Amino acid sequence: MLSKKIGIDLGTSTVLVYVKGEGIVVNEPALMATDEKGARVLAVGRAASELLGRGGKARAIRPVRDGDGVDYDAAGAMVQHLIGRIVGRQRIFRPDVMLSVPPMVTGVERRAMLEATMHAGAKSAYLIDKPMAAAIGARIPVATTDGILVVNLGAGSTDVAAIAQGEILALESIRIGGDSLDRAIEDAVAATHGARLQPGEAERLKVAIGSATVPAAETWLEVTTTATADGHNPRLRLSGGEVQVAIQAPLLAIAAGLERVIAQAGEDRRPSLKRNGVILTGGGALLPGIAEFLTGHAGIPARVARDPQSCVAVGTGMALDNLQVIRRGQHYIT
Image (cartoon, rainbow, N blue to C red):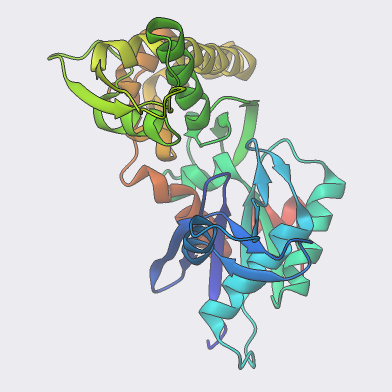
């Protein structure tokens, strides 16, 4: 078969593309640079980030905002660019494309996304909800499991779902993700030290010394704050303990969402959910201690998937070989 099978995970901060037989072929910022009017795309992904970093009049556009707000024109343009990059200019054999979508998008929005994908050059276009794709990419046998919980921790939002026999039994999309943790760190530093962190420093703190649970040994990191009136950029030395305390509120909101989904799934499903546990996917699953944190608050064992950042993209591509559930949902165009 000469037509490629492509799965796309278009997230708030990152776009990943999976091609059957090749694996993940794109892992770049979900960012486009356009001219001032937004009429012409100048660069996409890493190239867009580099172009915008040089200053000038280029305009930055993110197709997905706050986890679930989608700019369909921008998303279509990005998908078109990605298909062109993978297939090349000679599109004799157009690809089958499946995109992951936030679970709370409406039917009208799904139709718009499908049409944009077809316009971008797909032979057939399919959609799959992110939690289902995450479970498939984590190698969960979704068609036969008697119950499992998936928590997909993205940059803009966190999707929590209970899945059994190929269907989502209960679902909640929480407007809290990795970006929320960064803002919580920024606010805590401002409140405690009276200084604002330079852009990107909160994320650096989270990645380098952050933890959902109390760290076993204290760690420290020096960061830069914004300039004072005299132009000086003071530096602060912050501890992992400070970061851990700062991010507790958003993490507790995620744990509360998980508990609500467990309750919604029903008493009869609770034994199987407890037995099979929670699988954590998405970039936020890389936060040290997150599995232990959620286990402690929800009372159900949680574990991090292998390569959690890639699960949605991989599952989106794998689902193209098992379309029964997708076709039953009528979320496709051929």
